[in-house]
Length: 542
Image 1 (tube, rainbow, N blue to C red):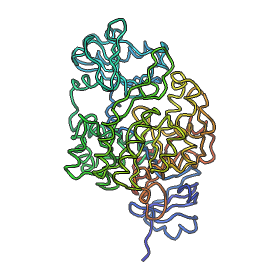
Image 2 (cartoon, rainbow, N blue to C red; image 1 turned 60 degrees about the vertical axis):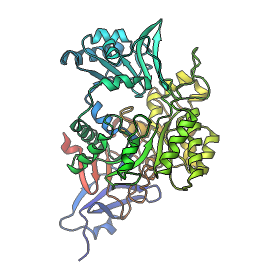
Image 3 (cartoon, one colour; image 1 turned 120 degrees about the vertical axis):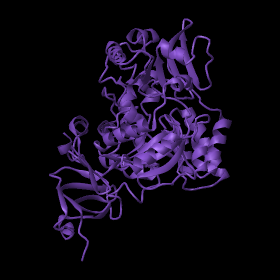
Image 4 (cartoon, helix red, strand yellow; image 1 turned 180 degrees about the horizontal axis):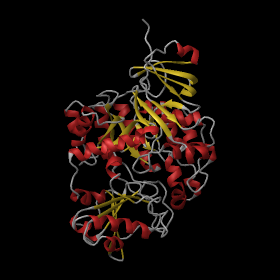
């Protein structure tokens, strides 16, 4: 008796992959793709028990892979004060949101907020300590900038953290003062004393964050992601939380774990001792890479640049590590068998990271280790040549152009800002760029990301070097096949081909024929299938 499909999709275009192209019908059996082809070819695989999904002209694609986000942070911050411009467009609105949350809490409980962007506020500046004091006099406040690299704290939070005007600035950090007084702004490593006095999350908090964030991703057609700094919130306990979530059926998306590797906070020694190296696990939950931070964010003026930002301070951003420290840490992780996926945005940080990777690869050659440069925003042609030669890959978030492109122009000027995140260049060089959101830095909603890949437009309409545009097929390839490649899983997922995992996203329109504007404004994910199981259906989601 021949095998009959459990699910057949038909009645609309099914984009199976860049090389595979578009087919009329797709058959799923168990958790894998059984066959893809014409309706006539698939008809023979349809039985009495087969569930038929009529696409009605809508596009089906492989499930999307957000190759760089923070799943636990995304899920947990969904409970924080929403300080994003869409919710709090003015400073007054932002302070009102903080005051409203403080009013609901007991005195002394923390007000946590995330998502503001000073370049989009009506004041054009960061909120100040005294303003947070007035909004929340009896509760400590930590307001995190959209990039996740800068926090504004009120006086009570600073007092609890032991930070005052005499506090020394830590290496790789910034405690801002004006006229001898704290402004409340802390950048990079200077934020550690504050996070240290916030009550740590319980394991249930972590699992709930994984579950809440994961279900949101499924509603967007995202079936796979990388959690880009496991250990940041709950240390090694995050490994336990992920495994508990998987065991209890509370892990909604396939997750590839990037282990926090920064010395002083690293969970790599415990993971290595437990045998958790790159590739350990299965298609649902896998240990991926080691993550080390080299710099900050361009919009926050903390990405490490070789030339100064605009302005009188002549800052070149924040260098987190000396060359010697970085090279020692990279070599150690590389020698232990780990892939590395390190944060480097500015050209100086990228230079430092490529050099460290080259030295590690020279000491312990591995032509297919696929070390990654996370973000890789301001890379140079010379750096691209070295990346191609060494097998080092960029892992950018093109939605940064949409959300922050105008801020880049403001802090760097057009000549340096417009060519940033050079997607077309990376494609043409064979560097297989993935894409993602860095959520909760940006919303994981894929449609602004698609729009930017196609147009290079910011949210204000500024065109950031039209020569870096790609086609919709290339954009889909970045979101699927190249996402899988970045995780060394390109033979398992990222395409709808026989034997591949049956992860499918069905969108409300045919993206292949839609204008970029229509994709951005009113496209939705209607249906998500993960491993042959319908895990999201907009029609029944309410």
